[in-house]
Image (cartoon, rainbow over all chains, first blue to last red; front, side, top):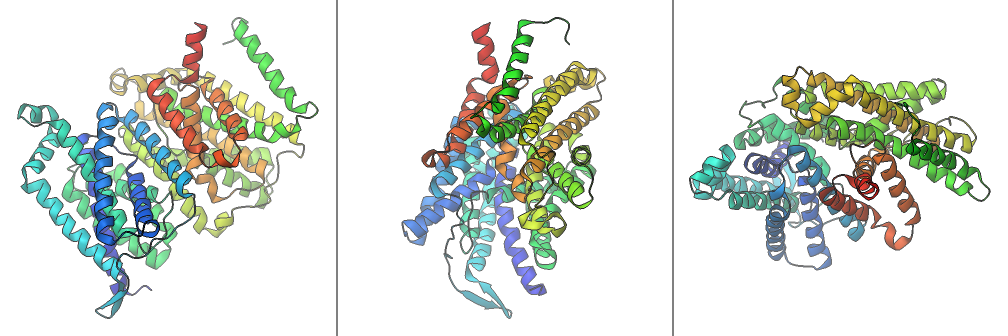
Length: 285
Length: 306
């Protein structure tokens, strides 16, 4: 199992998906200054949505993708408008978003029960790459995540909306004076982050089982990524995702998958202790 | 603290006597186990509230301190033959020690780093206890010796535990540390400027809270005779939060009232149709109360009486 090429490839897939997922968490923190404790539950929600659409309603793949992304965008915008917008203080934010996560999780339990349902692969079969057999779902996930990260980079650094996002992240009042509507930018960021969580679920959840608690480990990893890369730092988050993603796969393959979270926590505490501004020292905090 | 005997004190003592005697009455024995459980959860809620309600430190993973002490106490008493009460105290001290280790790096920073770390703790503990055979793996530890054989005595013990934590909290809050904790909650920067060693205050608050949670967890392990990784699931972590917010955070009796209300509803809502949705109902109710009446039931009570 511990064949270097296999570990390398799965490390790559994991890192790309972590990057896609964590950038959403990091952006929300950087732009709206909100620590979204419900960010794990958006991943879970999207996974159950995929499950309902694919196995219960038997919708074809393109329709599923469109419906999932559209619902996550709508969710993000309403989440911002109804709740996040009115939150002022940090601890209050985490408490409120955590309670939202609890409600959403127990609602999922009430609808789908705790049974570990499984989602079939959206891209079934496997391919031989350099003598290693890889699941098509994973190959598709890696390629999609890579392309989306490029799109995301373009969006943040090469478009007018991206300029507005970075302006609000730097200084909300100054951005307002430059004619940017911070409210719209923040709503956009929340919608973006929720849809990123949804896409990560679309890529990761098929071909495996889903559970109502599946989002918490993802939130842990996103937290590790932003602590390592610096809160609100786009490139920091991507580099940190690769460090965490490869360590995760190494530990999973060489030691025991059950130690991967402990390693992430150890990394979080170590970085908080030694370099609280993140490895690259560009954290907003 | 007891400078004068006030009507509220008398009412409190009367309520305690009723609570102590009620399950001993004929036909009421079915209440023993649920009420013991309620007292344990109330203790956990008191510990959580000491940290959040007074020092302003939000913990989303108090089940970790609860469970870690439960595990430690179970192993010490079962495998090493240490008497149960001693094992419980050592177990609570273990929780307190781990709390210090976790708190040292994260409490120097702003509040939200600490919150996220506490959110991660039970998830990590869940995986580790599943992985380590020393801790019983997925099945957990069976045959944990009970504190005493008689279930009524166990119940009285739990009542005493809850009362002792309440008194300990009251003592902490009225001490110098308590004043410093409240100053940290109200304005950390201002507290720092006035010479309060805020990281130290936060660390002490966390250690005391972890110790009390640990006592509750150890009591729980010896009550059930078994402890498994499921203790680290989100339900246990969210309960003290729901109870304290419902009852009234930052008040002494709030967590106890919340615990009794939630556990009573929990036991009476065991009908199949509602059973799956009751956790959702509690979370939604707490969310509504948190947003609409931040003072909880205690605040509502005060407004009605005052």
